[in-house]
Image (cartoon, rainbow, N blue to C red; front, side, top):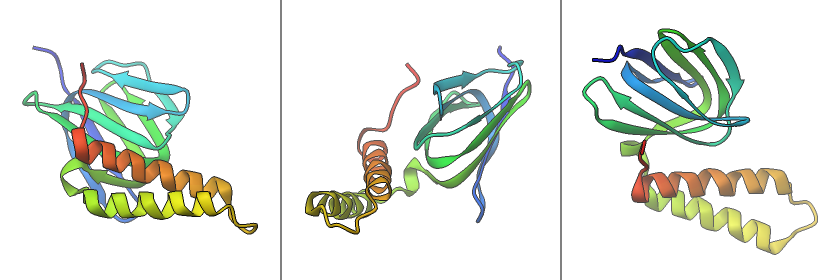
Length: 139
């Protein structure tokens, strides 16, 4: 049986995840990366997306993350995220309303619109909706 690693996902407000995992996949700045026990240490910034991991019992779990950093060590992955939300805590209707608001802002093309901020809000809402809708898979 393969060795497990510790996964911790932390926001400025709280611990979101702290448990053992068989594998962790996360949205790094240069693309998605995976970590198993014994991984070479590295540090990377994160993109908005989903952290996928298989817990010690083999169950796949998803967590929405928005920005931050990840540190991989041989025995653990620590994610310091600007915001994070486990799949089961995502409210699809709330995410859909946020998506609709962001899309409307972008379509209005007002002169004082912060386009980058509106695009980021749209991406966060879309990612939350996808996780709540159909989850994801490590396959």
